[in-house]
Length: 160
Image 1 (cartoon, rainbow, N blue to C red):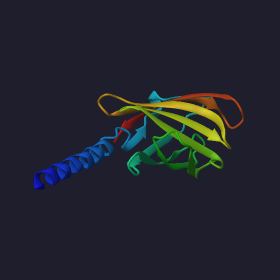
Image 2 (cartoon, helix red, strand yellow; image 1 turned 180 degrees about the vertical axis):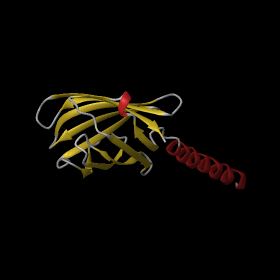
Image 3 (cartoon, rainbow, N blue to C red; image 1 turned 90 degrees about the vertical axis):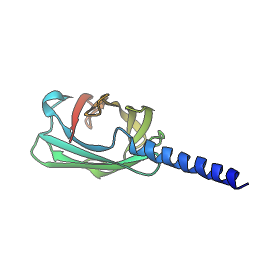
Image 4 (cartoon, helix red, strand yellow; image 1 turned 180 degrees about the horizontal axis):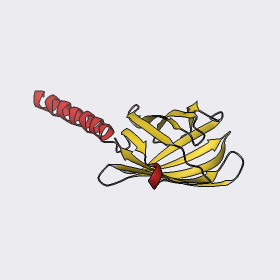
């Protein structure tokens, strides 16, 4: 009986450890600095700088906080907390984020699909890919700008 309880306890501990390890091993986690020279913005112009910090949030999500300097020289901020469950999560900080949501769907260990909506209508989709060495984060997004123009941006970040 004691051996059976010990075995169940060991299995439970291992499951918890694997779960914690999987969250800790999330390739999105870290501080990322935009490489403006390697990024493309259509339509432009590109921001002067951008940095994002991504932390684990719960068992299956992230908390992203970003700041930078826009092309116009004004400070920029963005933040949200979202799970990898495909459900909309509100953007909580940033310019023009009223009614803006993001949904995340994990494709594999290094790939996440994103869907942005404004007031329930899809305005953009994207794919985030972390390089095999974990040092580069590439976010390719397509959609429409606030004034309805087509948008295609490729943001390349380097891990700090």
